[in-house]
Length: 345
Length: 192
Ligand SMILES: Nc1nc2c(ncn2[C@@H]2O[C@H](COP(=O)(O)OP(=O)(O)OP(=O)(O)O)[C@@H](O)[C@H]2O)c(=O)[nH]1
Ligand SMILES: [Mg+2]
Image (cartoon, rainbow over all chains, first blue to last red; front, side):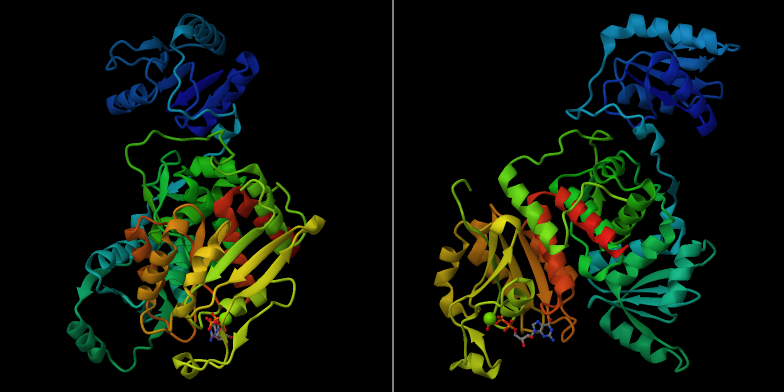
């Protein structure tokens, strides 16, 4: 039996999770849950945003919802007014579960194994726009649109060229360090350069400026990984399906052993970050850095207007014969030495 | 695929892309090559060229073999391509970045193999990037995306075993995505 807890801070969430798990044998999720949900508990001890309430209603239609605290703005919402203790809370939850059994909602076609992990494995987020990697993403977008060289000009410069290289006025290691610090106070201008402008600009540079030529893709990738710190860009909610638009150059990026399994999953069909954690067994931090790099490098896009996805049980790809998959597995085992195990450290 | 006792992958691409080299890198046995000294315009480009096909194998436990076939690069042999791809599990396309128009090569090969590519996985390896950095990999990706194809495109050196293994692994994971996971995990285990 699944219960969704919304609006609780970590400490409250954990306490409630343990309570509901022990007393009601419930499996507790944050909002990221596509399984049949029996009850939504909403924290109304602080002010509840109406938009948030509407979003919950949309996510879990027909599911009974109980607000803990008072929610005068939210019409028709059942509430358990303060003060309440754990005993009264449990009683009320039990009662609602009994009454509300008609309204088990199944969302989407995705069926998931009950998993407490889904609630534990939460992603932390950061604002990619406020760091160097985000700036780079913007510049790359612009370059993609215009198919011209793009100049990032600030305390140092990066000339992002259509030939797949970047000319930088600072060293690669300094760039990574700045990316990793998520330096917010660096100000840059972004501008598209026509060929003649570019030549003039290059000539105008003082001879003291040392220039490094770097591989664009490897650079963008490494800077994105450096800035992620195992967190996901804010734009990418954990449950939003990601759509693969191109493969990264796995032979020339770091951590190909993490990247390839993630990309292979995305190549079959769009998956959310939460789903990738489940399907690969990697940590949220590992998935977050790969997803960040894919996002900044432009290898993935958000699949808009799709339902959130936490986990899908359909592990065997359709249309592939078991025999073929067996063979491919043995080949991979051979190529990489030893019997492959189904375990990720 | 039932009743097929032969499991094979095809390696194709233009003259000098590195097909023979790639098979030698991947194969367990010394590859069977049918290279000859070219007599035509290819002679100006290289000393040896494949005239029939290249052949190598990857032997699996229990004696099963996976066959690797390399097509001859010269276009006058393209009548062989259809015969060779029949029943193949996948196609590895190698493209030489230092040729006059490698993107045109890509288009040409996509066209030539198109019925096969619609039903089997394929990957692209861009070679000779140490000699010619342009066009960038993104140009290949753009061309493929315009045809609605999202496939692995890696820059590889066919002489490098890790490069070729990774490209092969990407191919296998298109057959079953969980393969990348197990292979990468075992590799990580081996490194640790
Ligand atoms: N520098 C460099 N040399 C390469 C690369 N790939 C292959 N070569 C060399 O290019 C030459 C041609 O490679 P082959 O393997 O004979 O090419 P092929 O595709 O079999 O050619 P055909 O049989 O004529 O179609 C060999 O000398 C290889 O060592 C690469 O990425 N960089
Ligand atoms: Mg050859």
